[in-house]
Structures are given as C-alpha cells and as structure tokens.
Length: 382
Image 1: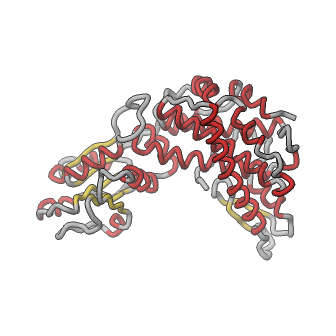
Image 2 (image 1 turned 135 degrees about the horizontal axis):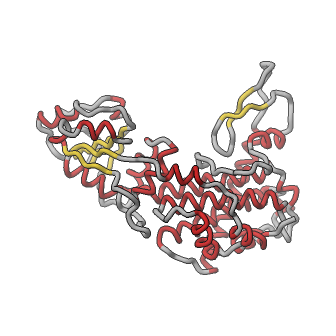
Image 3 (image 1 turned 30 degrees about the vertical axis):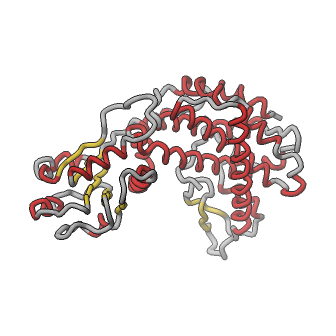
C-alpha cells in the first residue's frame, strides 16, 4: 500500500505521461473575426485580453477587428476565422449602409452576437435568427462580471477541442477555462475513486491507497496542472512545469490535510468522505496551481490548509451526489442487446448490460479501470 506521503515522489517522477496530444491541442490554429461597430468590437477585444498574463503574449494575436465599412473588402479574412463575433452597440443608430453590411457576413463558423448597452438591436438592423439566438448582453463593460459573461459565451460556442488554444491566446478566457478544468478533473478523480474500489482500501488513520490507484489519481492531477499551465501561456515543456509546480503544491501536504479530516467521520458517512478526498485533493491542488500560474503566488501553509478545508467541504457534497446518482441508475427493461447510459466522468455514452447488477457494479462499468495506462482529464465539468 502507498501512503499520501508518497505523492510528492510521484509528482517528480511522472516521466511516462504522454502529453503530446494536449500540447498539440494547445497549439491548434485559432482566430476570431470581430465584426461590427467600432466601439463594440474594441470593447470585446479589450475584454478578451483582460486577464492574468504572467507569461506574456503567446503567438500572434488571434483577434482581427473588422469595422462595418470594411466587411466587403475583408470578407476572405472573416470566412477564414475559427469564430465570428458580431459586436453591436445598441445605443448607436444604424445607418442603412451599415445595416446592409451585416447581410454580407458569412456564417460558416461558430458565431456570437455581443450586444453592448442593451438587449434590443438598433432600429433597421436584422441578423439571421441562428445568430441572434446566440447572444450575450453586456450592459456595462466596466462591470466586474463583464469579462466572465463574455468568456462564458465564447467558450460555450467553441468546440471543446479549441477551448485550450483559445484560453492560451486570450487572457480573458483563462479564469473561466481554469474553473471548469478544476471542476471536471476533480469529478473525474472522485468517480474513479468510487468505481475502482478505493473506499474499501482506505483505513481511517493512515489512509493508504493501492499504488496503482494513487498513480492514476496523481496523473490526472498532473494532466490538469499541465493544461492549466498551457492555458496561462506557460512554456509547453511538461517536465519543467511539473518540477515548477511540485514545491508549490507541497508534495503530499494537501492530501495529508484532507486525510486528517476523515478522523471521526467514517463511522457516520461510510465511504463518502473517502470519495470526497479524491475530489477535494484534486480541487485544492487545482486552486493552488491556479494561483501560481496566474500570479506567481506561492501560498502559505495556513492558506493551503484553508483551501484544503474548503475543498473537502465541496468534495463531501460531490461525493454524496455521485453515490446518489449511482443508486438511481437502474437497468432498462430488456431489448436483448445492450442498453446505454451516460458516463459520469465525461458525459460520453457507455454501454451497460441490462441484467440486474448492483449499483456499485454499474458505476464501475462507467469509469476506466486503474490498469489503464494513460488517464485523461474529462471534457465536461460537473
């Protein structure tokens, strides 16, 4: 059995993790054509670039601003963009020639309308319903929630495989991307802990894990941290990033803090706190790494203890949700082949036998086994 004190060593010896796919994902070509009123597109551009930028610019600025009077001349650049953002200042009257310019915009890529100042389009302006259905209103660009509103709308419109590349190039997307990354990675580790039988292997005080399980959980954390580093514009060398972050997260310190919180709880909650540890440990690691990559901030031991306590509270709640959801999974009545259910870890479809099996057996079918050599962080947060 491995103990939490072994985590620090695992972090510094993660040499076999293949991150080439993640690195390629971060370096995918990505561009935004931002078309519309000059004031609106300049505001959108400012919000997209407002955020933690500790490592400086990463590559060429992906945002191309196209005022309405240049739409026809720059139609090729608009069509070549990965995403189209239409910026509209609803406080400005729209001359007919500008209204006509909107009809020239090609909609062959994901599109988003940003309404600056209010929810109503200016008189005389019309856009395809498919575009106006995807809009975000930013009444006050100076409001504290304005960057998050825009970031949420942009990431919602982008395919999952482009979100890392977008965050790497646009500081305004990084905080939201990181929050979702921490949530999904924490949920993935919690569901793995449940499905792999870890709750049956954790005595109350020393909290040992099987080494294979501990490696899987730590690899998932390492993948989360690497994605986070790339999102914040850090250089892409994986080993350098792991060496950089290991002293920041304190090796097994976070896990030991969470393990201590199990004392006295197990008789009351059974294995729920132990699933919560997998969630809370990943969550706390993510928050501490976030502070480092965003601001170069190394938190004190007291700050890490507080984050760990908060993370364990969240982890307990998520653990209850995982167990409750698993108990509600019931086999479908029988077409003789296979029924389908959703994976808890990543939302993808998975096939299950329709015979009467226990809820623990069913949940184990949903998660890759501990013997799987290359774990991946899931793409949908809980």
